[in-house]
Image (tube, rainbow, N blue to C red; front, side, top):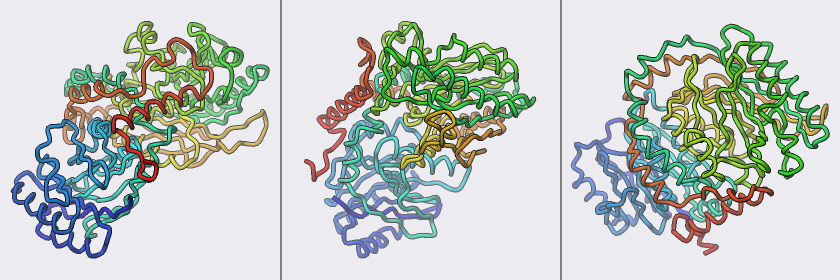
Length: 589
C-alpha cells in the first residue's frame, strides 16, 4: 500500500482555527491522502471541542487525523472515532488499514524507551505532534527524529508548532521537512517497503535487542537517575580544567594469516603510535583514543581453534604492553578497541575496548555487547551470548563498566553498539561523562543515520562521544588501500553537536577540546535534561515483557561460523511476525 501523509506546520502559538480548511486543501491536492498529523495544542485548549471538530473532518474527508491536546494524543479514524480515547495500554498501537500506528506526544520522542515500547507493541508508524521553539534543544530534537526511525525501522512523522515538521523513513533518512513558513509538508508512505525492510535480518535492530539484559538495567535505573540528577553530585566532584583529546584515526594493515600476524601487528603499532606521538606528549592532551581492531585488522571466516588464539590480542602479551608503555611515556589516558583472545575463555574471542591510565595500568575493559556476530560477519563471543557465565564471573557491573578518573567518568562502547540506545543509557546512568567510542564504520547507505544516532545518544545522555574511526586499510603490507577507506572520526559534545571532525579518510591525528565542568553544569539544567523525566519502572516492565534476541544462546558451544548469529536473528524475527510485532508485506502475505 502506498499513500500520502501530510504534517501541518504552524507558528509557536497555534490556535487550530484554520486547520480544518487546510486539511480540505490537502485533500483537494492529493487524491490518495490517508493521514494528516496536526501540531500539539496546549493543555488549556478545550480538548473535547477539538476532538469533536477533527472527528467531523476525518469522517468528511475519509482520512486519519492525529494530534494532541496537552499530553494526551488522539487518532481520529475515517469513521470519526478516536481510537486512543479508551485505550488503557501503556504503549497503545492502533491497527489501521494504513499501518500500525502509535502517537508519541511532544518531547517523549527524545525518550527512546517510549518509542521502543510502542515498536515492540507493533508500531511501524510513529506520529509525533509537538510544540517547540528554536532553542538549545532544537538540534537534539532533530537528531532524535532520525534516530528513533533508524533504531526501530519505523516511519516517524512530526507535526510541529514553532519548529520543523517532517517525515523520516524507516532507514532514518529525512524525506521532507518544513517550518512555519510552509503550510504543510507531505510525503508518500510505502507501507509494503517499510514492512519489507523489516524482513531483512542484517541491521534488524529490534530483533537484535537483548530485551532481558536491559530489563535488569532498567530495574536499577530509577535510583541511578536520582543520583545522576542530584545538584550536589556535580557540585562535590573536584573541578576539572578543560583539556584536549587526541583522536588517532589510523591506517590498518590486516593480519590475515598466523604466520604474518606478529609482524603486521607490530607494523600497525609502529605507524599509529608514531602518528599519535606527534601530539600525545602535549601538556593539554589528557586522552588518546585509537579505532576499533586497528592492531590486527578485521579478518572474516577465521577459525576459533587455529587463528584467533594466535592472532587475537592477549592483554597480558607484548603487543598490548607497548600500548601501556606508550600511555606511561606520554602521560595520558589511552583508549581503543582490540580483537582480544583471553585464555580464560578457550575457543572464544571478544571485541574489547580498554582504558589505560597515565601510569600504564589497565583500569577498564568492556567487551562489545552488540557486535557483527549477529549480522553474519564475525564468529566472536559477546557477553550477552554467554550472559549467565559472564555475570557469574564479573557481576552485572562487568557488562557496563565505568572508570572514575581525574579527567571525568569514562566509559566505552564500540561501533555497532551505537544502534542500541539502551546500552548508552545504561552507561550514562552509571555515571559516564565521556564515551570512548572506537569504531570501524564503512561508507554505506546507513552512514548518515548511524552518525545522527550517535549525536542523539550524546544529547539525550549529556555525554561527550569520542568517536575514533579507522582511516583506511590495506590487505597486505605496503599494498594499496582497500575500498574500506573510512574516516570521519569526530568529537561530539553533550548537546549532540559535532565539535570537531576529520572530514576525510586516511590517517588523521584529530585534536579537540572537552570541558567536563561545563557538562556537569548542563546536567543540572532541568530544562535540558530528560533523565528525571523518564519512567524507568515502566520501561523495565516493558523490556521484561518482550522476548527479544535471546541471552545465553552460545553458552554451551562457542560460535564457530558467522552465520550462526544471523540464524538466531531470523528466529527472533519469525517470532515477532507470529506475535504481530512485525507485519508481512501485503505482496508477500
